[in-house]
Image (cartoon, rainbow, N blue to C red):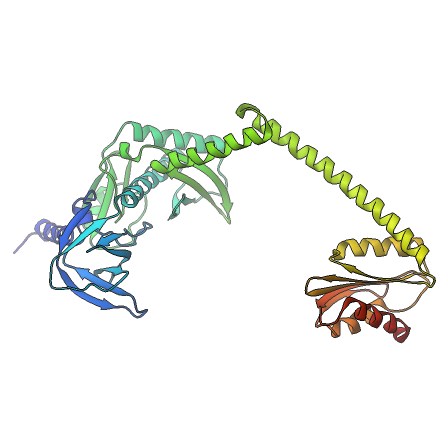
Length: 413
């Protein structure tokens, strides 16, 4: 009868033999036999191989892509113990051995990012006791969720510094299959989710963590870790960062943007912040001056409309005039003439915008006028007896709507 060590060693060998990415995560090409070819419930073609180097989605790490017999592998999932390779088209010959090619750039990127996440999470926990409770590996950046409501800039700096020191020192990254009983021998960063086929990823004397992902042989291959930003998420803190080649890509992108800004702002890099602050201050001044100019124009326009009207009803149809501007113009008019009734319609593309207002001496309900007018154009709006606004579909012309508003004034008095 086999002892426990031999039993688990045989189980580990069986897993390693079938999943080549555990045997050697650096395998880029391989050959295999097709076990089955089928279509899933969504009509997608997939094949199962007797062995594979394609990593399936799991443990926060996205799946590999590549080709099998020059057919694109678009997704890889493990379903009920079998690794399914989803292909763009059906495989023609399932009896012949097939040749698989891994997209190595994507695989190595995932290896760098995943290992970098282990290092960063371990550093947060060792320095400040902040446990990682969430992890996402995206196409551009990564995030971890820390079990803390607040992260100081000084803390992030120290964690980043320690993480990159571990990388520079090129510590080994080891993997080991253990039983549930053997877990007590390791100072795990977090409890493992699985109870059998437990795989540990170990950076000796720094980090011990249950993980089924692919990782490089040593921390030096991670190259670098850069924390980009962090924000509070409910009672946790979400940290955004990048590792490896993504650090260089981020630097290149940001440097390109910075160079463009130095040209646009005519300021050297070191003075960029002050140049932007001056620009924003100038924009605020310009906006204030523009607002004052608009107010003056509305004041002038209100006087002009009052002078032209022979009755107390000030009415007009506008083209593409914002409702907020019309509201200000109407308020200007009734402030100048307490007997005035203002009826404005603006035709904006396929919609009509309405504003109805009156001075203090008239008792006509603008709310009622607006309600009846909007019913003709499937509109919505609201307001009070003295001031109302709304809008709806341009089912009639602006002139026709204005005529209805004038007729409704007598009706609601």
